[in-house]
Length: 198
Image (tube, rainbow, N blue to C red; front, side, top):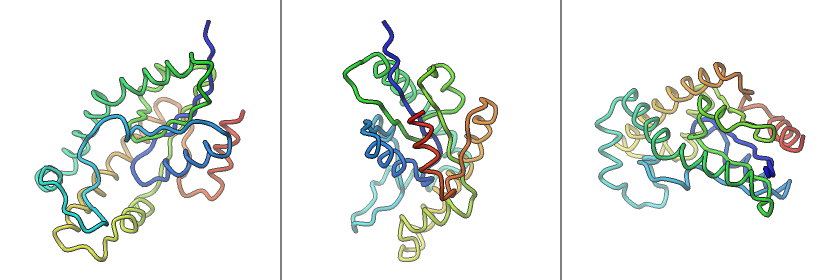
């Protein structure tokens, strides 16, 4: 028997506000919140705000690869390492009557893959933002103005990758006919709460 428990999937690139939205929605509705960031390791953000040094492999990753290669590399990671786990978790959740409803967010919620797991109660959405919004959010998060020139170059590479992925994922979302939401919309939380509760 299929229980078909509700699942809200929130995709989009880093710094579009997915985590905050997911946590807030989960808190308000009494749902469980999960992030794809918890599922598999990949060179993450190339900055630390606690004064510690970045691992050498993270520095090399952002120094040696072009933005296009960075985007291709992380997309391969999402497809090969993260997406199979996402699909399995959503399937397991939908058929577990004792698990609370789920809001699942992350950059690895791939618009061109969600149709394979979408159902009556699985609601995928995609967050899109313009380049200024993403760049400003990364600058703020990384304390960019206080970083050294070398560190700023790493952050710039991260931003360039994010902007490429932002466009790629938006194109996927359009092709998959997914609902696309503006990450800067002041009414975004209310819109997603209404969608989740529908």
